[in-house]
Image (cartoon, rainbow, N blue to C red; front, side, top):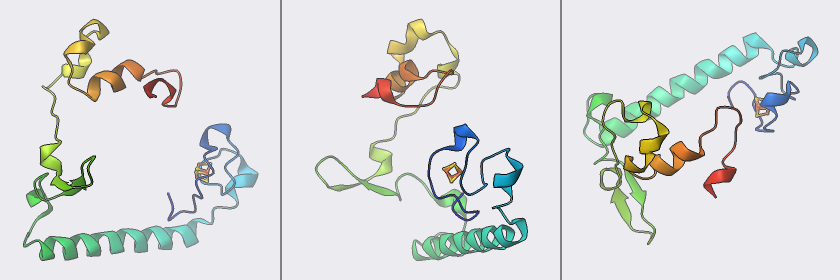
Length: 128
Ligand code: SF4
């Protein structure tokens, strides 16, 4: 999104995107010069792949499939670096396809997120 000019004005849903990225308005669409943005997107992805290969090389890996949650670090609430695998919560296949009456059986944070989900709107107000 940044590579094609998104400035995060967060008005995608209004059809008034100031950069022409997310609009059906032909006048606003003129702000998005496709040949220029195509080159930017190409360079963005080329650099992403380059940096991924450098990080994998530094970690002694030869394929992205070797990247696991044990190798990726985050910080816990005390500021200590911990592997993502220590925070990993998994769901059984199909666990989110059942009725909401069994939502309490879902592990957190899935349960609270699932209850807060609403197909009619965007937003996270009910999570607060
Ligand atoms: S309205 Fe356009 S510029 Fe704003 S966030 Fe959406 S895509 Fe990005």
